[in-house]
Image (cartoon, rainbow, N blue to C red; front, side):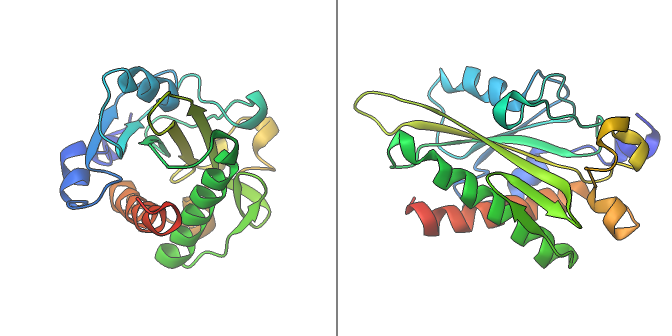
Amino acid sequence: MSPLELLDRLVAKELQADLSGVVIGREIIVLGETSSTNDAILQMAKGNPKEGLVVFAEHQIAGRGQRGNRWESAAGKGLCFSILLRPKIDINRSPRLTAWAAKAVADTIQNELSLKTTIKLPNDVQIDGRKVAGVLVEMRAREKAPHLAIVGIGINVNQSLQDFAKELRGQAISLAMALNRQVDRQKFAVAVLRNLGRTYREAFGS
């Protein structure tokens, strides 16, 4: 990473301090590299952590999207994270979680950065018809307890056009590309998590 990118590293303690008193973000872990944050949080779920655990990764080497697609993100330039939730919904209602997370991300982009977003169902957030974020929800059934839901979110933040594979350059965009300036990832991550926390409470009563 360049010196500028090192300065823009996510810091778990600072993120958590800015989110005191909330469910989503009550515990935050930042990994340097992992296969995918969904996989990482599933492993952590075996220890029965509290609802609202958030795991970020500066680099995913096997990030996943819907229908088995690969989610690619240059190291230290996007926001790749997963949230552990225990919503009191039937497992076949998981599309509600996808819709909630996509809308929360889209609204945060509009409110924080004044960029017009649209949602391409079921899980893509777009700017000018190009994908800027995606959501992947995976649920695990449990007996006599609320089901586990892992909500994985990827947001293209500070990538340049060259950071995307050639075949994706006409389909992908980052916030920095849309704004023609870099975005403070730490500050934007806090804004996204705050909005997710507020709207999760409203939508799922947690």
